[in-house]
Length: 302
Ligand SMILES: [Zn+2]
Image (cartoon, rainbow, N blue to C red; front, side):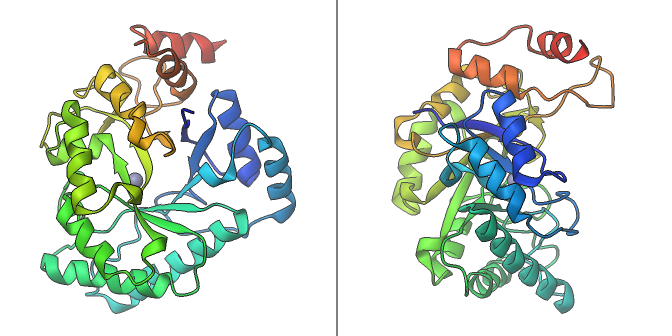
């Protein structure tokens, strides 16, 4: 069965709001941040709302396939500022606990940025931090995301991810999140995705793949940029993304859209309309929507 969903927002209705948005998009899974992605202010899990969310999901979305994403300011790679590094570890520990309280089993994490230290030390810092963060964890798998290689980002090649994973003691609680835009921007040819999976299986093991982020890219292969584009409109293209989404070896893995909201016109800076309902429909039909932007605007303007 195809597992497809998108990034949704976790507001004051917490998981219940996420489920409502997802169902309105025709999704059967979703991904959320427990607060704003760019800060670490978080409120406690509301267990009443969570019960309602689980009821609403019944038969339509399995909590096993739901994904949480840690905020991207968490940087486990650099320990120059010890208090910042310790804060990041502690925050990750709390984020794992929140996932556990919500019943969510998959937590996506950006490995971090080395910013001025050498890559071997950066990799050691990440492994050390993960071993502490996973100490009390029993059932939340941390999935390290494949990065575009922008700036000093760690994790833009398989070998770096393998080094981190090899150093994690609780092997069963560490995994990987593939991101098609990041892979493209880091130099992977998505039109030869099966060859990438073969290599991934040799180096890391295909069973480690916990999530796939489905995004087109605004930039060519190897650009190391990380700018997501709507499905079929970017440099990867609709057919190549469909081949990733329907790859039999990843059938059981949730596919999550993180494509950008669009504005009232192409020049509009204010992005207000989510594309997911329309992208999910075209993915299910395996048919590219040539009027994607216009159709989204027509629908939400009413
Ligand atoms: Zn991410």
